Amino acid sequence: MASLHLVVVVILIWLCLASPPEVASASEEACGTNTSLEGYVADLWMYQRQLRGRVEVLDGCSFQVSALDLLAGSASARWWRAEGPDLDSLALGAPAADEPLNRTFLSESLVFRLLPGVSWPLIPVLAAFDPLTSSLFGFVRLSNASDDSSSSASAPTMFDSCAELSPRLRVRWTLDNDSNSIDIGLEAAIGSEYYMAFGWAAPGETKPSMIGADVAVTGFTEDGLPFAEDYYITKYSECLLRKDGIAEGVCPDTIYKGNDTAAGLVNNTRLVYGHRRDGVSFVRFSRPLVSGDKKYDVPVNATMNMTVIWAIGLLRSPDSLRPYYLPLGHGAPAGTAFGLLYYSFA
Ligand SMILES: *[C@@H]1O[C@H](CO)[C@@H](O)[C@H](O)[C@H]1NC(C)=O
Ligand SMILES: *[C@@H]1O[C@H](CO)[C@@H](O)[C@H](O)[C@H]1NC(C)=O
Ligand SMILES: *[C@@H]1O[C@H](CO)[C@@H](O)[C@H](O)[C@H]1NC(C)=O
Ligand SMILES: *[C@@H]1O[C@H](CO)[C@@H](O)[C@H](O)[C@H]1NC(C)=O
Ligand SMILES: *[C@@H]1O[C@H](CO)[C@@H](O)[C@H](O)[C@H]1NC(C)=O
Ligand SMILES: *[C@@H]1O[C@H](CO)[C@@H](O)[C@H](O)[C@H]1NC(C)=O
Ligand SMILES: *[C@@H]1O[C@H](CO)[C@@H](O)[C@H](O)[C@H]1NC(C)=O
Ligand SMILES: *[C@@H]1O[C@H](CO)[C@@H](O)[C@H](O)[C@H]1NC(C)=O
Image (cartoon, rainbow, N blue to C red):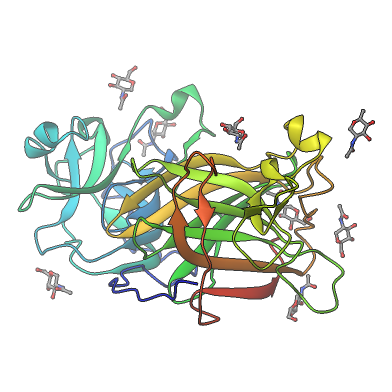
């Protein structure tokens, strides 16, 4: 089994808390401009520096960014206004607010004030931008809220909750009770040749085990494309096809023999989004809480404490014998390369 010798600088933003908004003493009467954008909410689209956050237009001259994450930019980095998010437009843009984005923000909620003379109609795109290095950290597009006041432009990097699984791996999630599904984002400061696996152990075991666990294996192909696949664990070994054709180990659900696998009923994990930025792998996928696959999926009750397992390890690319991404042994130590957790996701 490959042991893990990672020489990756961990630059995840590790705070995973939502802090209450810091209510600014601003937004007084001085800010007279009326705006149809008031109440408009949109998520920042991440480009660099792990930028995350939800922008809300408060009034004619201020905006709040909640759950703001950002790795410190240079002293010239600013909230920036531009016609578009492309570098040409950004180069022609101008600062939108005075505060430099020169420090690391950890899940903060802050109110920013537009510079004097700047108003929302002048800001089709609000970006976090460093004009010195021409680096776009991320942006939101502002459109008239009138079409749908409740509409929130959501970004795939944003979730309702988050938890640290290890110093290297974090899970984010958003529950959708109504559609019986959960969106899960895995995020790790690892090389692109590593997988991130996460899922639920078989319930009802007295001693939690990886055997019988239902996990998603996520990672990136050699072409840099993200993937997320539904796996099931029958044995502490890499997936192997025995002579009799039976698969065992850590295998995709679809590889196990049976009518249901042939009928495609077992492939229940859906890739939503993935990227690698700043040396951090991020993959978002969606899975049903309770799927129709009784054999290779664990029914998840989000309000109940259940054992979840996770692992990080090297990935082997598909070949003619094994047409799927093969997670290799995760190695040791526990808590860094793999682990389990008793947790409720409600
Ligand atoms: C903003 O516009 C609305 C509707 O046009 C109006 O009712 C409200 O008084 C205006 N607010 C300010 C501060 O001008
Ligand atoms: C950010 O810039 C401001 C204004 O230039 C300065 O006062 C502050 O010390 C800087 N903060 C950091 C962390 O560099
Ligand atoms: C909002 O709508 C007004 C009138 O329809 C238009 O003039 C303005 O450009 C729009 N603003 C944005 C940001 O789309
Ligand atoms: C889902 O259900 C749980 C438990 O009933 C509840 O706490 C949570 O708020 C619900 N989430 C949504 C998005 O409805
Ligand atoms: C597969 O389906 C056939 C026909 O429906 C049934 O006879 C057989 O027992 C099934 N095999 C398994 C392993 O479920
Ligand atoms: C699982 O389903 C998805 C979407 O329908 C599909 O793209 C993917 O190829 C399937 N995977 C397998 C192993 O069949
Ligand atoms: C989930 O667990 C809670 C508390 O243990 C229970 O009340 C609820 O009925 C369960 N939900 C489902 C769908 O099994
Ligand atoms: C889950 O377990 C933790 C720690 O044992 C406990 O504090 C928490 O109340 C439990 N939650 C539920 C929903 O049972």
